[in-house]
Length: 166
Length: 166
Image (cartoon, rainbow over the protein chains, first blue to last red):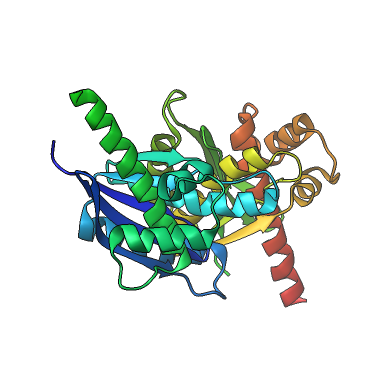
């Protein structure tokens, strides 16, 4: 089986974090990560346009095999959920247009997958990602979240492949 | 001042209603309306792709001057708000990519603008739209909502133009 290149995305309406990871045996190979930032004073449609353009560049440059997202956490603030929904919709649209499957993982699964603890703090997740991927410095928060969900999917597919072989 | 062609959109994750209206003096001229439907069993990213493709065809065919949306009603169900946000984000992105301004009106303003009553029932709004635009039959609900917000913006711009002249 060819190695799967997973693009993790942490979509927001002001910035979008992304992280690209390959699983190779027991190791995760870091390919790239970064953030797309929209001009903070721009209106929402224009911010979405900037974020979409940036994400399209990432898709074109890296040609990932699959897109992984964290399931949105909606229990508190419906207005925040609405705005996050806008950014997620844009990310999903571009993934679908690129012919990619979108997989989603609950936040607790992502945390557990990276740290072993479903209730880990953000800092723990960031530190663990830095170590797993051998990054010289910690990724910025949105990019770290994107790498975390990419690792979660790489891990899940790795397990599925191992189980198939067994 | 050239007549402004307003595209009203009622975005949803299963179907998107649209309606195109021009204001000419005291009258509203109906240009077109309809719905884009996504396959109901498809996953969200694929549904957004189908809806985006349909909306792009509408934008290319009619070349509207501005896009009008109802502000989303978020007070009850955060999960519903999240999903509606996905569809709204797609609509906003395509509007921004077409170089169009997106204007938003609260639901009560749309109802008042069409019927004179901010708490009008859906059926009243639909009947009023049919009469104002001289439609042979009532538009389907999502398309009727899209026509209603298009009329609201055409009305608001008409007033603004009159005030400017005065």
